[in-house]
Image (spheres, rainbow, N blue to C red):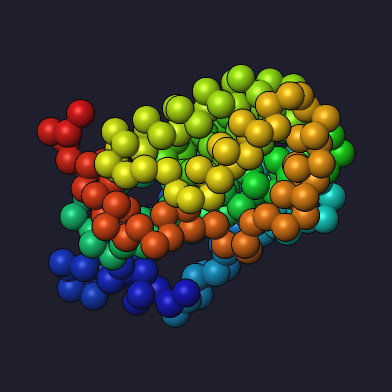
Length: 243
């Protein structure tokens, strides 16, 4: 990346000369703490991986497409919160735009990994462990219906149909409170299916196998077709007066 671009990115209100001086001072500090990790010339800056430097996002990006289910679980466990949560450069529109875009990108990656990991576990009938991951997903993104549907399915397959039915009630309540909408047709259909298969987990093993063979698209967009509700959620999440 060019030095001029970085200088303008972090110090847009300064002249290019002063911004470049600030950048040079910052780079000197960085190289003191991260030797051998930056390749710096008079015109550009490039990050160079080093075996002693561990970056969770780099590792997660490398592992997310792994074919080994155990590696996918390791990738998911690297997610500990929103991307670069707590980093705030107030008054830098370019940073805010980039940061929000990256947080959304990594949120979608996490959604896909949750779905893949849960489906991996269901495919080998490890429903109890699948429930654990599905609960994590619901706790992180309670307004994502796909997470609730996975949890409902896993609970039923694990022999806990009553809890699966209760999860539908929770899903419906959260959607009503947060978005003022009803569950999607897919969720309603799953609820009806769950009621009809309430006799036990045996029948649900077949249902789960069919679902994991034909479920999720490559990109999860849990609020697709609900742009108005999505915008409402964003407004509420960013409104300090809303409780």
